[in-house]
Length: 357
Figure 1: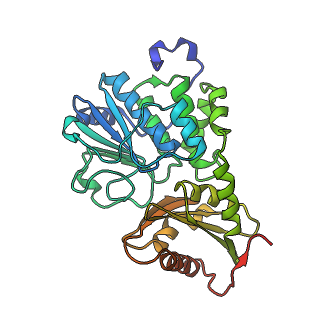
Figure 2: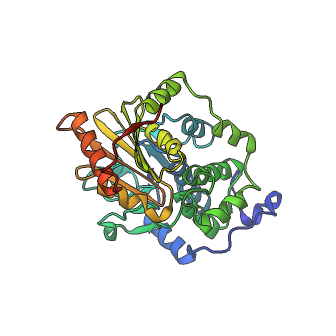
Figure 3: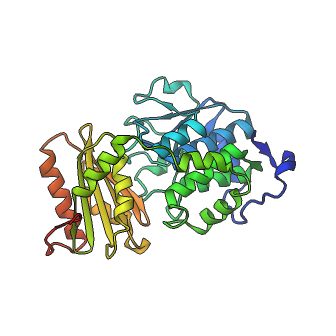
């Protein structure tokens, strides 16, 4: 049960973080923007824990604070074992739907953890949401048309800024929602080790008082299918080192999430400052980029690697993108991406070496 501050006797030790830019005026504007409901909450394709948690936070806010119902919809697939476990155990309200229908039925569309024009969500061209909540770089053009926006690229996770709306409304999450928020921050910042702001840190630490550790363990240690290990082995065999960067080309993948898992591992290779992993799924090439230092700005780097009609974005040490395979061979497009990456990183003079000796 989610409770207001006045009814939280069993949670009396909980204290909200001190700094919150969301005030009563922002809440009133959000309330007037979403109308009388129901509200449609959307996120990016192939959503992650941050997206799932962010959407559930706003659905909770709308229902508890204002009695307004919501429908949460994602597109694409949820394939990573941890993400599937989170969807099942903590955020089962989300529904999968690749083609949106009857959007006129809703008083407002809320887009979380993505932006219009980012190219990674199912919102149709020409349809603007009423609300956009995100933390990704770059900030897309046209946000000035949106009635209510909160895009803060300095945040490590979208759910951290979403949580601040609960705080402003005096709502304390129950252990299920608290665990979802906690894991959303954990996943996007790798336990505060990657791109977490002071606000992310404060919320993360405060939520330790509320989370369900058994549920958290079931998600963080979710069982892995055999295909995970076969793809993992293939990825390591396909990895090459160029000076201080590493590139892994997985080829065809069962699910697009795997490029992020491989990139997370490869950036830990000693003497490496950037790792790029790419592979294709259903006529789309997916990329994940990781860097060692936030000042390298993975979001800016990947913008130089992924060119139109591709889309890309990121923040701090993490970035991702996609490139359609509408024309040209996979091998040619992959070679072009790898060549641009090596030029951007200044590693064109190095001959690639296999990772596995």
